[in-house]
Each structure stands twice: as C-alpha cells, then as structure tokens.
Amino acid sequence: MIQNTIKLSFVAFLLPGMLYAQNIKKLSLQEAIDLGISNSKNLRLSQSKIDEAVSKLASVKDNALPTANASFLYNHAEIPTNKLTIGGSDPIHLPNRADAFIGTAAVEQLVYGGGKLKYAEASTKLLTDVARLDADKNKEEVSYAVINTYYSLFKVLQSKKVVEQNLESIAGQLKQSQRFFEQGIVTKNDVLRFQLQQANVSLTEMEIENNRKVINYNLDILLGLDESTDIEISEPDNAIKPVSPLTSYLDLALSNRQELKQVDLQNKVADINIKSIQANTLPTVGVGANLYYINPSGKFIPPTNQYIMPMTLGANISWNIGSLWTNKNKVTEARIQQKNVSIQKDILSDQVKTEINKNYQDYQLALGKIKVLETSITQATENDNLLASKYKNNVASAIDRIDAETLLYQSKINLELAKADAGLAYYTLLKSTGKIAQ
Image: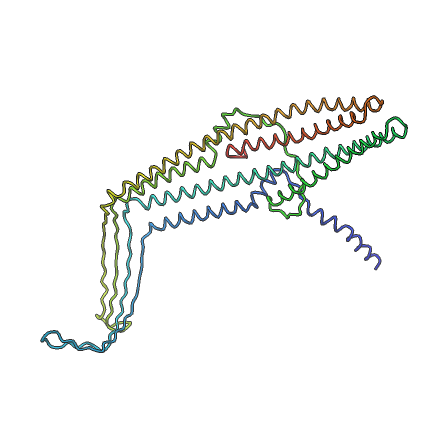
C-alpha cells in the first residue's frame, strides 16, 4: 500500500513536467513553412475556389452536349353537351366523355453557334488558370508570413540570450563592487549604480519575454498548432547569401510574378470575349428529332391500330441579321476593356520593378550593417576589457565600466538582429520575384 502511494506521488510529481514537455515543439524554418502551408485556412479557401472554377468549366463543356426531353400526358374530358349541329346538316353526336394519352420525346443538337460554345469553354479554362495562380500567390504569402514570424521569434530569443549573458555579467560586477566597497576601494554609489543597471536590464528581459509570448502565440495560429504550444526554433541559416545582379531579379519577377501572369490570362480572356461578341453576328445551325405517341382510345395499352407514333427529323438555321449593325458598339467596348488590361499590366510591371529594387537595396544595406557591427563588436570588446582592467585598478569609475559593458552587449544584440534582418531581407527579395523557394 505504501509502495503504491509512493508510485502515485512520484507520477503526480512528474505529471506537470510531462504535460509541459508535450506543449513544446521544435521546428526548423522549412518544417514551419510546410506546417503553415498544410494548415492554412486561406489556402483551403483558395483550393475551394479552384474546385469551383473546375466545376464551372465542366458545366460549360456540358453545354456542347445534345439536349433531350420527354413528356407523357393523360387527358380526361367530360362532354355534357355532346350533340353538335352545324347549319342544316345532320347533328354530330360526341361521346359523353373521352380519354387520351399523349407522349412526346425530343433530341436537339446545336451544330454551329458561331463558335460561342468554344469561346465560352476557352474563357472558363483561362479563369480556372487564374484561380490556380491566385492559390500560388496565397501560398507564397503564407510561406512569407511564417518566415517573417519565425525570424521575429528568432530575433527575440537571440536578444533574450544576450540579455541573460548581460545579467550574468552584471551579477559578477555587482559582487565585485560590493567586495571593493567592503574593502573601501569604491563608494556605496558605485554599488548602487550596478544595482540600477541590473534592474534596468531585468526590465528589458521582462519586455523581451512578453514579446516572445506574443510572437509565439501568433506563430501557433499561423501553423495551426494549439495556442499553448511553446515553439523551440532551430537557428536559421544566417550565412550570407550571394547576391546576383539586380537585372536577374527583375527578369525573374517579370516572368514569375503571379499578378503579371494573371493579367496575361485576363488579356487572353478579353480577346476571347471579343471573338464571342463578334460571333453574335453569325447564324446558328441545329438539328433535332421528335417522336410523338398519340393514343385517343382511352386505354393505357391501346388495341391494335388505335394509336399513332409519328417521328420527325428536322434542321433549323437562324440568323439575327440586326446584330450586323447593333453589335459594333459591343465589340468596341470589349476592345477598350482589353486595352485597359494591357495598361494595367504596364502599371503592375512598374510596381514590381520598384518593389524589387527596394528589396534588393534593403538586402545590400543589411549585409553592410553586419560588416559594420562585426567591427564595432571588436572595438567594444577591446574597450570593455580596457575599462574592466582600469576599474579593477580603481582608475575608471563605475559609470565608465557600466557604459563599456552596456555598449558591448548592445553591439552583440544589434549584430544578432542584423543577421536575422539580413536573412529576412533575402527572403523578402525572393518573395518579390514571385517564388520564395529558388
């Protein structure tokens, strides 16, 4: 009994840690992107739009199939006045009641409609391709949103790591200053300054932890994870990516950007729309067959020779001649719409070029910052070592010592942030070309 109690107590002791461990998920950047894409609600909506467009295309194709209909009619008539006299002729005696069965069946096929069915199918197919491009664009947006949030979390964690190192160093400096104070080497004011610095850095740590929780929650939502999951990230590859000439990124964007591809498809749709409108001036040709069943005998299964089943075959040609002069303005309007699409592409192309150039220059700037900060860390380290030595020898003040240490750790934080910013700037540049994974 005692052993069971000990076992239960041990499990109860471990349970909170076990539950906490279950809410930690370690993810690399690529794993986070894949998870975000697979769980994205926006991408599910995009897929639904594609399915809708494909369904519309199938419906348009169905319009080319022959139409058929059938009907069957039963008719009962009561004839109270069944004696009919016309002029001076002998009266005609009709039955008191009559029953009849009438059935019809018809099949019709449009042979030529000016090409409108063909144009409708081609237009709908192009609109389906537009929906697919829209889904590709949304996929890029989702990927970039995950990358952006992932790097934001990485920056916060790197800052937290440096701040923790700073706090550890300050704790050592505080102990040293207290020891110096006891020995009469420094004043009480020096000890208070280190304590104040420790309090300020602790406040910074609290703010960083708060930001980490906010960003972690946002990333949970993006990835479709439980909101209480703590994400443990793998350090992204911050190696400096080689930069191609600006023109190569411009060429990639002009050939890959989904918006430009969509405008090209819309231009083709506009061209097909013009042809479809012009087809209104052409005649239509159709063929059909009809089968009739007429049974006036009043019996559902009539006696021999008391019903007829005529069959007809026919063809029809129709031509709205008035469309030859009423259709001109519709064609003109469609051509203007197509011209507007071409102008829209020129505007989009200029916007893409501007975006590419900005992102390219931002990445170059981020790389330049890294070089400057690496140099500044070397200088700040030398300065910190020098002031540490002077402070130990009571040559420098506590303020000088604190300032040197603060400058060093701020330089370290800035370098980590600059590396993360450069990584994100590179992905931003790739995104503006229309394809993040290259």
